[in-house]
Image 1: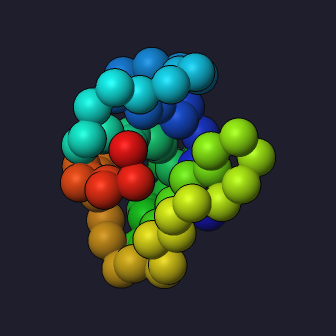
Image 2 (image 1 turned 135 degrees about the vertical axis):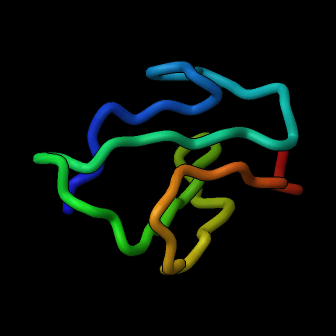
Length: 67
């Protein structure tokens, strides 16, 4: 499955986030069903957080203490 139409707090390409609980949204290409996700967060080119693979069928709201 390929994630398409990615959004963070409803923004297509945010340059920065000011909230502690960003919302991540996406659609599955071709209308396929999602069974898991993995999100990695980068700051200034360095990975600062990785969710690992998580079984889930939906979009997400995270409390990221890295912000």
